[in-house]
View 1: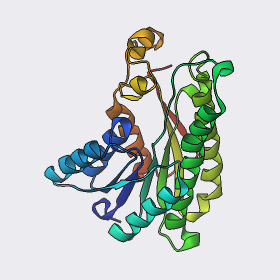
View 2: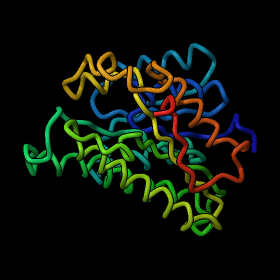
View 3: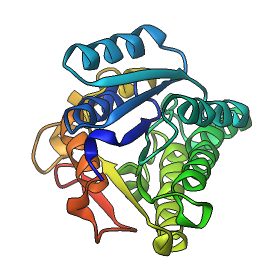
Amino acid sequence: MSTATKVILVTGGSRGIGAATCRLAAKAGYRVVINYASNEAAAKALAAEIEAAGGEAITIKGDVGNEADVMAMFAAVDGAFGRLDAFVNNAGVVDVKARVDEMSGARLERMMRINVIGSILCAREAVKRMSTLHGGKGGAIVNISSAAATLGSPGEYVDYAASKGAIDTFTIGLAKEVATEGIRVNAVRPGIIDTEIHASGGQPDRIAAIRGFVPMKREGKAQEVAQAVIWLLSEEASYTTGSILNVSGGR
């Protein structure tokens, strides 16, 4: 199958690691579907950038934490392209720095609904389209985890770390479940990456504060994570499934 005919859907694709993944996927020849929850301007600008470079991209609004939105998003991909070959479970949220004994039930519900349940719902729909069991032609899924899954993020956001720990476990289980159905499932664990997620969690200076704890003494770039994602989606990783790749500067 020519990569030029393949379709990729990236959730949370309008900024950060998601946007970097969309750019590299377009360069690799994928037709790109950029999902976004609220930042329409950024998503449209990215699609225009990809089109201007000779690629093909569309945008689809949808909150992965809402099952109806997830269903509508995948239906829109069906309508636009009639196929799905690669899926990146990138959309996720963090919250303000807090101890567990300060966290509200509403915060925890939001965290797990978007980061865990939303990711599983999206993967469910991707499997329905890719699995040979359902008449699909196979495909690849990459879940975006975090180094927090193994570090625990004490005193910052243990809830976020726990949600990413769930993603790690989900990746391993789903990979084994669909291994004979033409689908590979892997994950990438980014470390400290220079994206807007730190500011959205109320810590715009977080990178500078913890850079010294990274063995490489620097933060990563979104493109460095995206390169790992694109490799895992590619045929070069044809015998790789159930793997979790750290992109964390040694942290």
